[in-house]
Image (cartoon, rainbow, N blue to C red):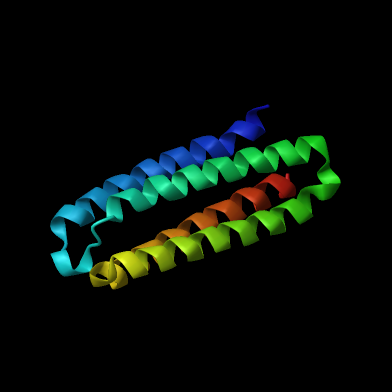
Length: 125
């Protein structure tokens, strides 16, 4: 049972650290490098990651054979969601696009790495 809760603890702990670093960057960096919505990016990725882990665990318990298909489908859905968010943000807030896109990309790469690392560690045990 302890194996199932370790991704939650790891994601929560790292998200708190990322959020604290983001707050420091938000107030200390020059305003042209900081997006207005920078403080919302980490909680967004945290919620998506937690929901992803919950759904992955549910599918794995019900039918482990369908896990690969579900994982690939969930990646496609998350990418579509992220793409839609970037397009909507670019259309409605075009003066702040570049800092938001760069911040979003950085956190996307970080959380994707964490997601893959937790899956790899789960299946290598």
